[in-house]
Length: 364
Image 1 (cartoon, rainbow, N blue to C red):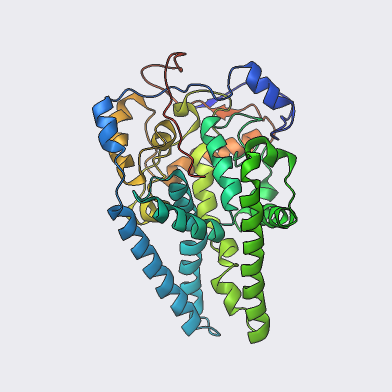
Image 2: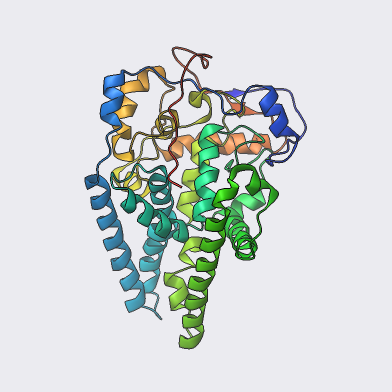
């Protein structure tokens, strides 16, 4: 149930403000997190990487992308193209996000070059600069929802309903990304980026930005040459019109839950979903399990869930049940930013100072 707390002033969610120092003072920086008990033998089994599941998923994803994209092209100029582009947009703008995510962890495939190749493609599709977001996401796992440290907090408190509405079409991210691409193409990094991206990685950031500009120049040039929006409907615009489901997924992960804790049971949600949504989302609906043990591949997360569920809060029956909690919480946080949902935890209630969190591999 929601936790009533005293009102407090708006916090600074930037990585260069006073909250970063406060997080360090509280012992929240690169700390050890609570982990539900599981045998070493079973964890070793769950962590096994395989190429097969991701090859099949990628083949199905690519085939459905091609089929819906071709349908949109074939019926271009008539209303019949709309359902094809609606489906294509979700497959492009939403499904690319979890594929970026899993390949970024290096756990989707066993073969590294497969992870790296799909990571670059998916990053472009979901507007995540590949080298920026690789390091951003590493920080997100190290300091999950720690204010002043986590660069991937989806909705700061108090939330802005206007910005949330724009985010359904990915517009705030698009502005942030293209501003960053322009800055990086000129060889410059922001102060926040310098906080989590090693200087040795900056040349990769600059090179990727220049490649992106070249690709977008070709797509825009093709649209101008053909006097048609079709090239942009296939590459570029789906990152906007197809991102709505990904944003709903993203909100459901952490929004409305506790900040500044060292227990993923208090700041992550696991939500049961049907097979279609799990395919699009690559099992990231098991989000608590993923954060607790981030090196377990996506195809083993349902098994991990069964192993530790007795030590975790009850999962949500579906996305709608989660939003029945999220929506009123967001509304309340507009006037009381300190308000959050206290998830019931079982077993050990806090992180033991001697526990060891599973390390996160970065394939830079």
